[in-house]
Structures are given as structure tokens and as C-alpha cells.
Image (cartoon, rainbow, N blue to C red; front, top):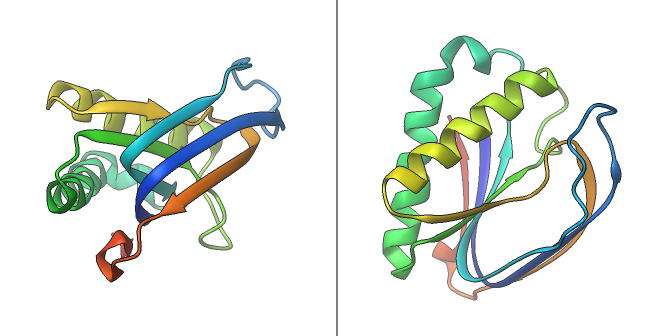
Length: 136
């Protein structure tokens, strides 16, 4: 799994078209302010380590959120951080578990629609810490 974590002043997304034929319909926009945006890339071997990777990813998200004093998180499936990727169902399940655990921990979590190409805008904060790449 690869994560590109960004602390964003503003995040906005609008679904453009399905990239996975059986993806759930999603017509609405996603928007957040003062949030950790987690661009998540799930690799082929990751489903075998699902629980461990979810725990590690959540720790990274919480760590960055704590540095900026926010409880807002956006999970955005982003299959562009490596050349190979997990099957869509496995990736969607991993992201769903991340969302469930973050919500249970008191975070306000929004998700980009899974299986869609999206139009999006991110206004990333200036400090170096606002941009963190993690390979789990």
C-alpha cells in the first residue's frame, strides 16, 4: 500500500465517469476544509495483509491529523502511485475498513467515490509536513 497524505485547506471533487463498470452510482460532489486527504493506492499483495495495513494506514492518517489539529479526513482511492494495483473489490474493502475504523475513532470521514474517474481540486498547505508519502 502506498499513501500520499496531504493536509488540505480545501478539497473538492466531482465524479466524472465510471472506471469500474459495477461501481456504485455517485452523482454528488465531495468537499472538505482543513482535512487530511489520503490518496490510497492498494497493491496486489495488500489483500493478504489487509488488517495489518488498515491499522498502519490509520496510524499514519491520525498522526498527520494530530499534527494539524483536525478530525476531518478524506479517503480517496488513487491507483496512480504504482504500476500494479489490487483487484477493485479488495481495494474497496480496504478503504471501507479504513473509513469504518476512523469514524469509530471520532473522525469525520468523507470518501471519493470508488471506481470513478474524478475531477478534483486540492489546496495543500505550505509546510513540508503537509505532504507525506508513506509506503506500507
